[in-house]
Length: 132
Image (cartoon, rainbow, N blue to C red; front, top):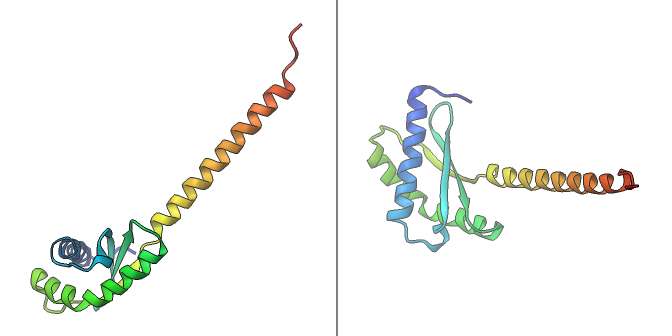
């Protein structure tokens, strides 16, 4: 959903500020190798959902969620200072499944292509006329 220019700007700034604090100020090992991929704001700008990915598997996702919940107050307080907003939205954290979905689709497409190539290779050798 397309928001107003102001909400788009705030979403981008929240993403930048949280990503910056993750790399510079957060020492929690659960949040290493975490990438902030985006932020969605509710219409009233009271809730900011922060999307993230991890370099590891599902266990790392659960650990990262726990790490974010632990660091939520710190992130909100410091983001509010950095952004200069009158009201800082409440932060919620969610794993971004879009990258996993894209990787699964790419894998499926590659499998279909290799299956088609195998069928073409077999089809050509079976249907090809024998040399005389």
